[in-house]
Image (tube, rainbow, N blue to C red):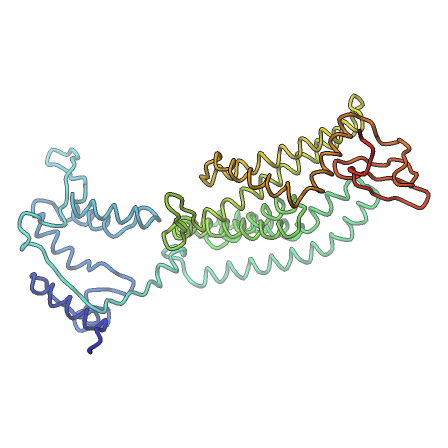
Length: 438
């Protein structure tokens, strides 16, 4: 039994297209190094010379500059979205390319440049080529502006490196002075922990800003310095935001994702990356529900941000209630715990809703969770309910002297799940369900 190879399919397709009237060409022959080159480089996917001749043949009433404008619109992408670009080019093929034409009276009018003659298909230039090699080196280096010389970019990189080393030396000299200054001012200790690691990048950023000003005054291109400054600003902002997250693991993950998104945005690659992660290759579809990798990452970041915000609001409320004389100690604990639970539930519901999950489906999940609580988490929730009852009826409050299982002591702190008691032997904690709250 013969095996059908890719080459066999390719040859069969070319023979079929040739029977339909297509001209057949070998890809390397029309390549930049071929016998009859029609491409200037391997990153050109459009046969511009052949298309230019077709435009003149199909649109003889239009001037050459108008046809060149239509060719430019076909060659130049308008959006980073592949789907939108496919739709735009498909519209050009069907409807033509809209252009502006100068009339004899000096006014400007609109016209359409045809790419395909649907009335007379023999007037078109049909070509099928195999082994069409594409190497998009220019696309990879498209972030480098046209006309920028290599030596100018190397000079900018050398100056930025020198400023980086200088900023590092200055920051090393500033650390001992800042530490000594903060020793006499305890209030600034927390600010020192946050800002001290940022002395080096902030100093480097200041130097880069001065260098950018000098380059702008000399009317020199500053593309590399602008990218370095943008990356540095993004790093400082991400570092400040991640420092607000107390969980070290969550802080690192958030910093990596946020800085990665900032870098992709600076290099104009964020849109294509999101489109790829939202594509069908990275999407799990179950019936009418679909979930892509991008949605998972975006949901994780949203949940982390909302949980961090809820934790911050809870800590802020706890500090405010600590100084409130109108609330009893038990009431402070109850209000703080209630608000904390409400904030976290609210953050979770917002995140679930952003993914597109129907919140009514949580009723089924809630029933399953209640069933699990009834069997496996009886002690945990019994402890929590006991603590809430103690806080509500105010039968025990900080400062009371109590006896629990032959242990005599003074209530130091009252929580929803435990009570801290100071005894003669030290400080112990006991679960709230063991206390006489009834």
